[in-house]
Length: 191
Image (cartoon, rainbow, N blue to C red; front, side, top):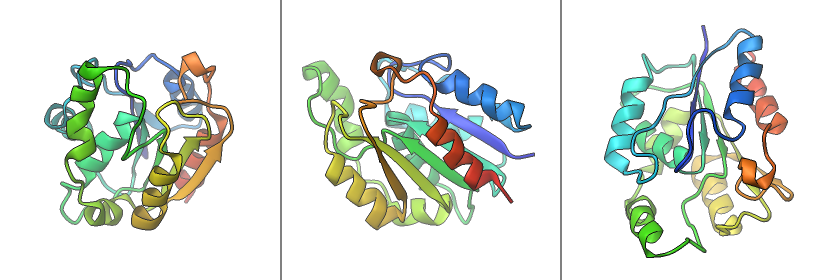
């Protein structure tokens, strides 16, 4: 059975935003869907999140699909770079980033700093990820649309889709469902 893991964003929970909607839609189509509750979500750190993700994803392989939101995409990439000669079925990233602007104060900047400045072996990620689709918004408050889009396309071979007016794809931005991401995932899941 194909498994889909949805990795939530910073300061969110499995029941936040569009995650429950996507889980329900995929389960209705017969997929096993897991949304692990990531640790220390209000102060995420790389090692804790990557280790937690590695424990949550059982037997990664071509039947494994990963969906990330914001820092969840970072955690997925950092997890994938550690896999040795293992390829997953594909991934969908929503509001993924390598660069951020407009962070809300010194404390937030301090938490984000390691995520922004610790290099990711994108060659390893590309080998492990297979097919990647990325959704970004033209009005994301953390900006860097061009820079992030370019890296996803050029270094990971991703298909990048720019949505209009979705902000950071959160409930606060009015995003409770994400049919575009569901369709992108369906296209990866089809044999």
